[in-house]
Length: 167
Image (cartoon, rainbow, N blue to C red; front, side, top):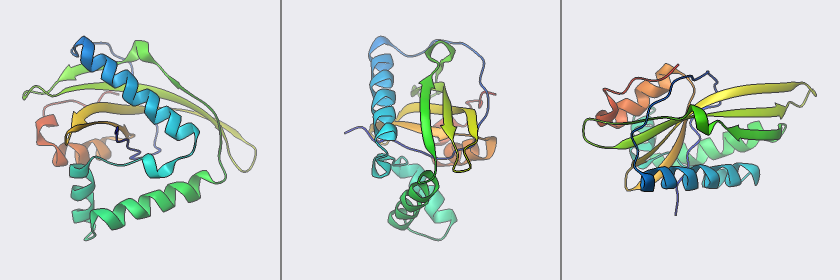
C-alpha cells in the first residue's frame, strides 16, 4: 500500500529541470502522486503518513512517540481542513526536478498548485514543493514547505544530506 505524507502546508515556488529517475521509478512517482491526490480529494487524512524514519525523528525531538505524533497530525489536519474548500490541486509535471542521492536513492521534487477557499470566503492559491521518493521500503509524497522542514527530512534520512532544496 502506498504511504503518503503531508508534512506542512507552507508554500514556496519551484523552477528547475533535471532528469534522474528511470522509467519504472517515474511510473511509481506518478502512481504515488495520483494516490496522494485521490486521498486528498476524498479528505482521507488517515492516509497521510510521514515516512516512519521521519515520523520517529520528529517524535523524538518532541519527546513523544510516533503513534502520538501521527494521531495529533491527523487531528490537526482534520481540524484545519474542516473550514477549507479545496477547488483544485494541480501537479506541474513539466517542472519536476529529479535526482539521485550519493547512495542511489531516486527522488523527484514536484510542485503542486492548490486553489482553495477559506471560511471567510476568500480564495487563495499556493504552490508547494513536494518530494516523492522511496524510503523505508515504500514510496512517499512529503510536502516540504520551507528549508527547516527539509533539514528535518535530511536529519531523518542522511543520504539526502547532499541534496539541495529547490527554491
